[in-house]
Length: 80
Image (tube, rainbow, N blue to C red; front, side):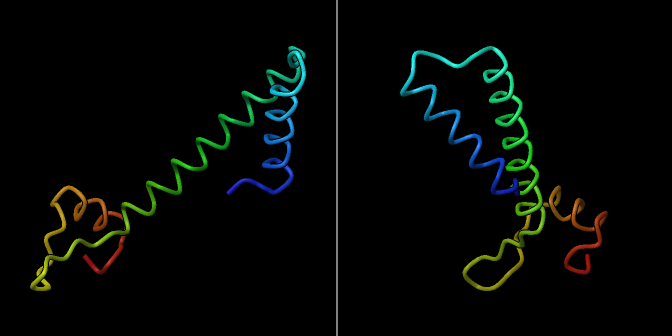
């Protein structure tokens, strides 16, 4: 997760862009870099979340896709 300072700065720049005419080139570049970092952090967290999943049907049978089981095995997750 991004630091609170960085999230606050993203919001500050977005608010400024909406309320004023436009951001300076330096601010636009900073905004894009912060957004890229945020997206990268989000995707990394989502990937870890998905890779840690175990899919179970109504009867309690493990129906996790084989591709995901292989990733989990390589990473040593769920004892697979």
